[in-house]
Image 1 (cartoon, rainbow, N blue to C red):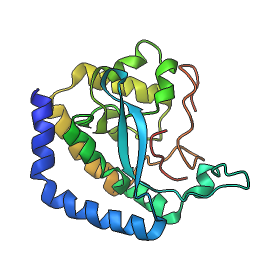
Image 2 (cartoon, rainbow, N blue to C red):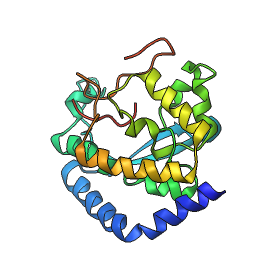
Image 3 (spheres, rainbow, N blue to C red):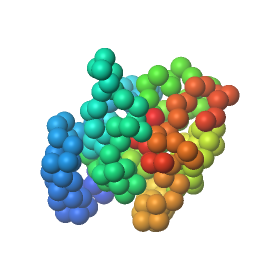
Length: 207
């Protein structure tokens, strides 16, 4: 309850800073990439319950002759890459936070199909609400392996406090400004997590 109150209070108090930015970025996305402005995708929330994650769209809807979307690297625009590098594509997630689907800090929400690929220990990342940022994001972001990332997520689940959340939020600002660890080496997006024994450009949208 304390964490939830902190999340809502923080988002509302900082609204004068992020709300105008949300509107401006949304308008630019509409002009540069067209509709839809928002990227919506089902992601697992607390206890693995699905919710609709909201982000700004960063890819063009380019398809081949059969109507199949082209690979991410070919659809990702320079503008979209900049949005990811600056983390501005994440701004709409404040709506998910206000809805109670996400928290400011927690393990990042990944893909629904990963639920059956986690070990029992890795699956504990879903004991808390997913976060806009997290311990793994400030300890390596996308430049670490899946196993390292899940280990950091589990550490957060076991040690979470409001003070730790404040520390992570401060470190997140520094990471964004420095643009450290924004992508996996040689990848346009994050490679898919295939299972506990599998480790696998431009910053990803949390594949």
